[in-house]
Amino acid sequence: MRPGACLYLATLAALLLLLPACATAPKPEAKQAPEKKALSGASSRIAGILREMSEVRKAQPPEGEANADAAASGQSPLEQRLNRRAQALAKAVSREMGVDFETRVYQMFGAPEPLKDETVMLESVDDKGNVSEVPVVVQTRQLRSLTDKAVAMKAMRLAGEEEFATEFYKEVPEPVQAETASAFRRVYEEVDAQAIAMEARLIVMLKGGEWAGPEGKKPAANAIAVRGLDFEKGLKQNWNKTYDDTMYLVLETASGPAEVFEYRMTTESSSESKGVGRLESKQVTYVRGKHRGTDPGYRLKGNAAPGTRVGIKGEQQITGANIHSAYSKRPIDSETPLQPNVSLGCQVVAASKQDFEKALVQTLDQRGVKQFLYTIVDDAELAEFNKILESQGVKSVLASAVSR
Image (cartoon, rainbow, N blue to C red; front, side):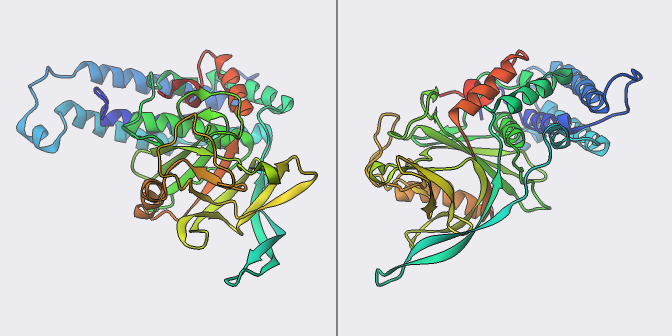
């Protein structure tokens, strides 16, 4: 755990994730819109809770005064008190929730498009190598682009309403740091994880996607892949020559703090002879399956999603756009070029087969997660989102706050 980070911060951060979704009784001013009043009430409660937490924090006893019970439990008396109080506050606010963040976005932009079944003809190869075409049903959800002028203007308006969401951004750690890291993966916990999870949810909602929530004791996973967000260099103009994209996988339960896993990857193919394959910015569902028929990985429901190939006229169907490893025997960095034909349009994590399976597949298997929603965000969209936040005096977590 990072020095100074306490469990109560995770609970507080989780509470902040919920608070923009809260509503209270309307203010007396008759000219204000109901949605604006609800957001104002949420901001007021956030401020009150932060003040209370600050007062409790000041009561921290000098080092060395923790009792034997606290030492045995691994928590100081202050941490135990903070945890109990934070949990009580979270439950109280949950009872008051009325108009949530998603509802406010839907009021301004409209509800998400429904998932649609699209039947496409794909090539199928049998065990003898015979090729044939088979119909495959694919589930996709149409999304909007944050670079669209009308969408960006609405998002700017929404961000300006009663300091929308900025109370959360003021509490983001500087910087957001991982608990553990390797050449292709970082793991975030507690308040750092919650910061990433909150922004990922914000972006997905603004694009018109859905965010899967936990059901009972069953955890939920959501993923966004940001093109041009380099694992080491941060946000830059996207291209398809290296592994310059990043996927954030957010795991949430009903009772605990979020976990976030960050992966170096590419969302584009390396096969220029057949055109650079790119999945469209539609929300899709990945399910546990096999790549190449043998290797553990994730496949789209129906094994494909609509996409295009640069340099080839018209829309093509990308066959088997799976999430799989790079099959690399050496570590991959920001300068490592994509090998020819490593992918015809798959989502490729920059790791060996063994490391990929351990760091992604086993991570989800151990938590009982067999599928997750997946949303692609273009580099220009994250840049536009950051501009919108900067207009309110804060910055994007993914673009500016994550330590690289």
